[in-house]
Length: 85
Image (cartoon, rainbow, N blue to C red; front, side, top):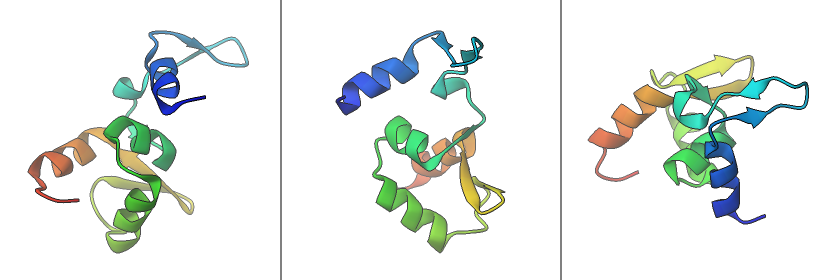
């Protein structure tokens, strides 16, 4: 499946989950996985993982055990202010 189709699929208003409930669209989620953030921000997963490893205590990262979650709004602010990523 192409990245474009994945994005369209993720952006659909209502996505039925395997258990019958509905998934939250990416643009409404508080945190994103590295894979979701890569698609949402159009930044490579390797680049995001590098940013995380270099800035482990950044305010836009929430650690769930050893798994980083990207705080969407705070990372949007970081990206808005950055000239280069």
